[in-house]
Image 1 (spheres, rainbow, N blue to C red):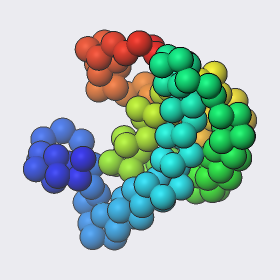
Image 2: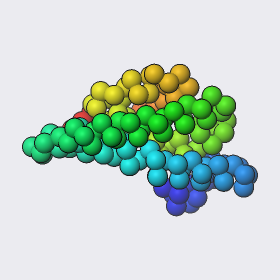
Image 3: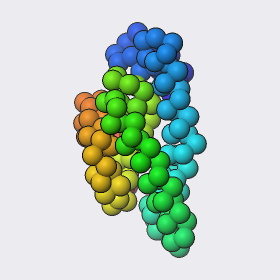
Length: 147
């Protein structure tokens, strides 16, 4: 993703920040996502969507652990988003964009919208980023078996 954001930075939304400081914040939140958000939401996706689809049992212990880890990460996000509109500041960035696909599954077919809705600032952030015209276009073009 960073490659494409850099390659096409002069076209459309500036996803990497306009200053070196903004770029640093984008990178910081991409790392938070990679090490804290993604592992938990990935396990939830595998257990709640893919295991049933392929006839494998759901590991309820892993689901519980992943729910707890994701909840703690979302609490950190809530704190951050109480101070800025988006993760890296008051501008939409790659740090926000990269959360959309898995979070779409979380609030949709996984039925865990409460994890977002129970956090005022995370909920407002999600409403903002998930209603961007570009994401709506992706949803139109890429139908998945999970919605």
